[in-house]
Amino acid sequence: MMRILIGFFWLVLFVLLFGFALLNTAPADLRFFAGMEWRAPLVALLLVFFLAGVAFGFLAMLPLWFRQRLALRRLRRAPAVGATPAADNNAPTPESIQSVVQVARSTL
Image 1 (cartoon, rainbow, N blue to C red):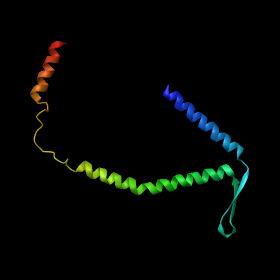
Image 2 (image 1 turned 45 degrees about the horizontal axis):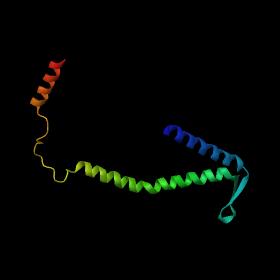
Image 3 (image 1 turned 90 degrees about the vertical axis):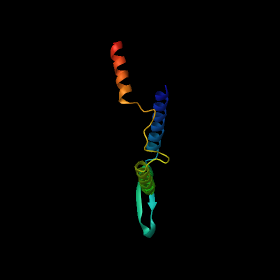
Image 4 (image 1 turned 45 degrees about the vertical axis):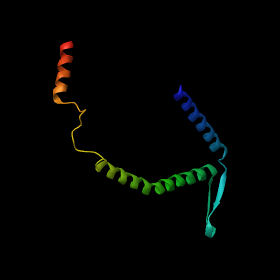
């Protein structure tokens, strides 16, 4: 049921954005410094600036992602705090595993 609701939400969002794009095809002027001008449909300008924002956001997050990956790699390599190399008393021994296997075979 939830998948249907999520699919319906995305369909409605797509139809709204597609309708917005169709209604905003009129050319728009974008003026830069030094007299430069770019004339394009408003939807194209919005798409270009949206994609530029996504790219800048991705680039801004890269240093944080690399620091987190490095910290995670260091944590995985470091021994756990308070861990002792002594054997775990609750760990199964080969003899107990063999006895379980024998019992399982005898019940078949």
